[in-house]
Length: 164
Image (cartoon, rainbow, N blue to C red; front, side, top):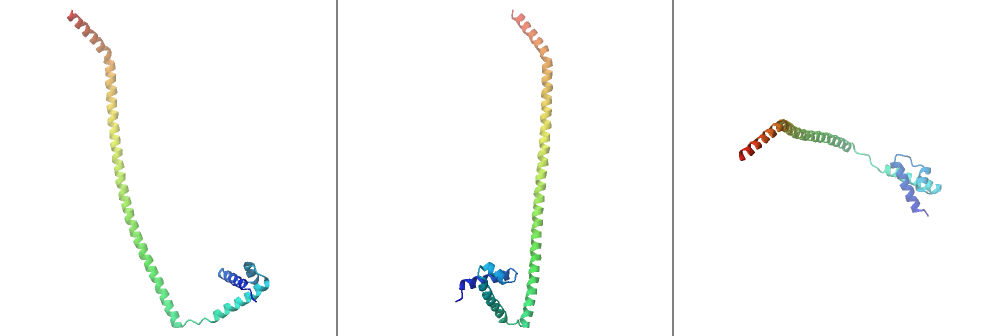
C-alpha cells in the first residue's frame, strides 16, 4: 500500500527542485522530502514518468497560430514602446512646468529677500546716523554744562539781587 503522504511530499520536493532550476535526484528529493531512499526512488521514478507522459500529451502548435502569436507579440511590444515614450514625454513636460514654477517662485523669494536686506541696511544706516547725532549732541551738552551752570549761577545771583 503506497504512502500517499510520502508520495505527495516527494512530488512537491521534485517540483520545487525543478522550478529552482535543479535536477531532481533521488538524494536531493530524499533529503528535502525526508523520506527513505526506497520511497524516494520509487516515487521519483513515478514522478518522472508522469512528467514525460504529460509532455507527450501536448499537441504541436499550428504554424498559423504561431505566426499570429508572433505578430501579436510584436504589436504588443510596439504598443508598449509607444506608450512608454508618450508617458515619458508627458512626465518630462510636467517636470519642465514644475521646474519653471519653482524657478519663478525662487526668483520672487530672492527678490523679496534682496528688498528686505536693502530695507534693513537702510534702516540700520538711519539708526546709526541718529545714534551718532545723539552722541554728538550729548558731547556738546556735556561740554556746555559747566558754562551753562556758571551762567545759571549768575542768573540766580542777579535774580536774588533784583529781589532784594
